Each structure stands twice: as C-alpha cells, then as structure tokens.
Length: 261
Image 1: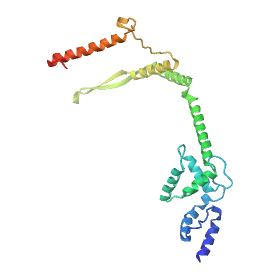
Image 2: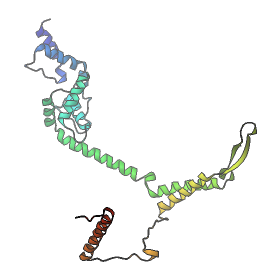
Image 3: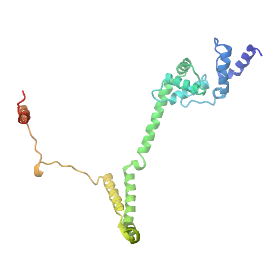
C-alpha cells in the first residue's frame, strides 16, 4: 500500500473527529500522532454525547472543545489557560489522552466559544449554590437556637430520670485489700458523680442558650468603693517621670559606689 493511499484512508477515518491534517507536518509524524487520537476517537467524535457542564453548546463546537472547556471550568477561580495546558502536558506524559496539546488551539477555542463569559456565569452559579446550601444548613436543625434547646431539654430529662434511679446514682463496685493469702475483696457502693456532673453541665448549657445565666464582672476600688478617675496635667506627668528616673539613679549610685555621669 502506497503512502498516498494510506494517507487517504486515514483522512477518511478522521473526517468525523474534526481533527485537521497539518499541511506542513510530515506524513509519518502525522500518522503517529493520529494513531493515539483514533484510539479515543469515540470520546471526541461528533456524537453529541459530550455536553458542557454549564451553558449551551455551540453548533460548531466539537467534543474536544467541550471537554477542554469543562476542564477549564472545573479549575475554579484563578484558572488560566497556561495552567490548563500544563495539566494537559502532564497528562500526556502519563500516557493519558487530552483534547489538545496546542496552546494556540486553547486560545482559539476560548475566544471563539466565549469561555470567559461561561466562567463568570459558572462561578456565579456555583457561588449561589454554596450560599443556598449554607442557608439551608444554618437555617435548620441544631443550628437554630430553639432546636438546641429542645435537644438539651430532652437530654436533661433523660439524665434526671437516671438520677432518680438509685441503681444509676449508686453503682456497685469492688475493692481489693491485702496481698497473697490475705487478699480480701470488698463489695462497695460508689456514688456516680460523673452522672451528676453531666446533668449540671446540661442545665448550664440550657441556661446559656436561653439567656438565664449572665456572667457579670464588676470592678471596684479599695474595700468595694467606686473606682476613682484621676486627672493629671502634663506637668504632673513630667514630674512623675523625672522622680522615677531619679530613684533609679539613686539606687544605682548606692549599689555601685559612683553616680552615673
């Protein structure tokens, strides 16, 4: 089979993939490059199976362009075509198929099919979904104060019932005395302090949720007298600073036997 015949057969097989044959590329290199594409041609064929994750597909938009746009959208805020082509190059090194390895093709698709506007609308949609989800979470269940109060009340009632049951309040336990043959095991009854502690904590949480326990801090002067407010002039402040330094110098003089210059 001649190279021309092989070339024509390859071209016929590639008609539905929208992959153009580079005019200046040698036929041998072209066949090697397209062999990988033919293995995944169903992924990027014009079957209409590939759909954009956001927006409407253009009539002339190929499956490869749609996949590349979807990858670009998934990168999120801060995305760039340079980062996308780097991801594709890394994927190719791992032997994975990519929509394109050409930076120029990505820029052409981005401009032709309005990737920038798609990204803005997609990011706004995602942000709206996040906000709606946050509102649903914060506006239901234990995020609401009255729901927390109901749960705490149910817990308090349960703990109170256990406290009223002597078998829960006083627990049977055993204690070992002595060693060897003199060892004795005593049966004792232990107070369930942890149950009381949990009940008190539950009541405290209830009080906090309902505003029934407000912690106040009061500041007073000597012996409970009101705090005084001192008013000092600038000369008073200078005088206090000078006196303080004089005391420091006097202490240093008495300790070293000489007065600093």
